[in-house]
Image (tube, rainbow, N blue to C red):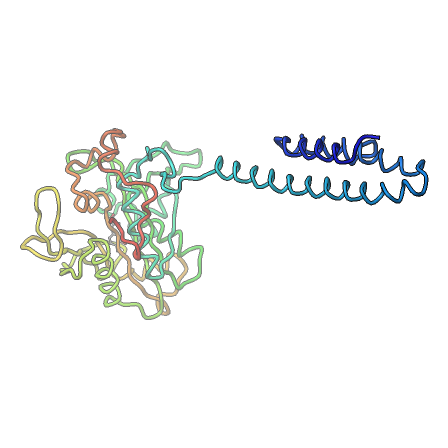
Amino acid sequence: MQDIETLETELLGEINAAQDLDALEAVRISALGKKGRVSLMMRGLGQMAPEERQQVAPKLNKLKQSIGDAIDAAKAGLNAKAMEARLAAETVDVTLPTRPEQQGRIHPISQVVDEITEIFADMGFDIAEGPDVEDDFHNFTALNIPPEHPARQMHDTFYLREKEDGNRQLLRTHTSSVQIRTMETIEPPHRIVVPGRTYRSDSDQTHTPMFNQIEGLVIDKKSHMGHLKGVLREFCRAYFEVDDVEMRFRPSYFPFTEPSAEMDIRCTFAGDHIKVGEGDDWMEILGCGMVNPRVLAHCGIDPNEYQGFAWGMGIDRIAMLKYGIPDLRAFFDSDLRWLKHYGFVPMDVPTLGGGLSR
Ligand code: DAH
């Protein structure tokens, strides 16, 4: 039988030399496994004379114990080393940007729509939508613009080809059509804003055939013009990011409101930018008024019970003025260099808390 001490030295040497857990496991099997060298020696005890066994057995037990302990210790050491290596390999540099470079940009119109809807959502308005391809009823008749009404000529409408039933659809000339769609499908009270594309056959330096509007509608039992003014003032302050704005309401005419007004705000024009709240200029920014009772009646709402106000505003111009964009037509050119210059970084979502435009 091999000398126990020699075997112990040999095995401890092998344990220390094991470079990884697999190698260590191989040493364990070769020593303590069923046919391992220590196990075979233990089995040999049976053939020994009692006196010899008494002498050898404690030594073998000690050997088994010390080899087992040495393997456990080596295992712990290798595990710790493996963990250290893994941690080193998986280090994350939290200072790196999330993407190498943000390439895309948010179009200024989308940015302004986000800003405006954020302001009105904060006041408790819902965002409503309607189709760009409309019918005559929703775009005109229900808004108190019957056929032959002169206001129809003012709208330079794009008509689609006549359908088999004789009806002609059209591209909506204003977002006011969504007032009707909302009131005829949902029970009052209403508090909505409607951003959307609108179309008129009109094209020059300040007009494009497609443009953007945002509509507002409030219908309740006691809503009045004072509320309208309060809502619009709050909107202007938030949108232009100033403490106060001076507003001017000029009497006007729209078939769907009575009385009607156009709203101007005091400002100065400095180059392509506008300064709101000071100066000697006035800028017209929207049309508004109390919803005409005939419009309510067209939508099945009792004008003796409900009343409210509405407004409609072009988005493109107030976007140009806020962000110093000199040419309206560039909005629709899809020029990537322009977009890179005037566009917004996608992660900077406008919020009232975090700042609309930063
Ligand atoms: N629809 C009008 C336009 O496109 C704007 C407008 C004026 C909308 C007064 C309204 C309103 O809701 O009350 O010129």
